[in-house]
Image (tube, rainbow over all chains, first blue to last red; front, side, top):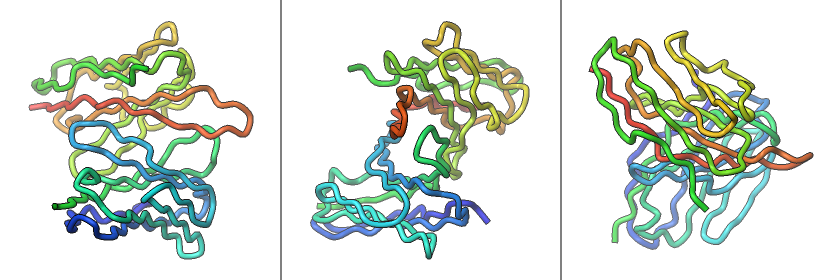
Length: 112
Length: 117
């Protein structure tokens, strides 16, 4: 079993839709949860991070962590074509200097 | 502020040849990381420098891979001799030295796409 599972997609939605991206994990030691966005031919860019359980909101993006279920989510409201990218979840045991364990990434396509 | 840069952007070599990848981190960033993504798989950690010292090289696949960071600035990753399974995208990332209780944000370069034929 992989430490982090993420459906690669692709996920295709119309502009304006609410997008839900998810990851599950098996390592109970993970405390620091991140979402990266990667555009084609670019490197991953940190979008959001949360520590332990709970929700965090940043504009149209909301990150949720449910440690009891070992399940994390990223919601995108009012999705735009510019949101089309690969979204990678990543997680690590500590909030300080860390080596993240990545999911495979989910390819999101938002069509006009 | 310039981001993390990597050179070359693409490299196609034959099995048995040598390839050297270069990463220039963001100026002032002490931490430098190398990662690799094999097609269809996750991004995997290779190693971590703090300035010129190797902090963690537990992800290096074997002794055909050699990473250096002379002077604590740019870093090189050499693969010698290259094998077919070394094909993938090699990413470099850098971050500032952490302060007490601080959170680390790694900034990734665009990657080097390596194809070994």
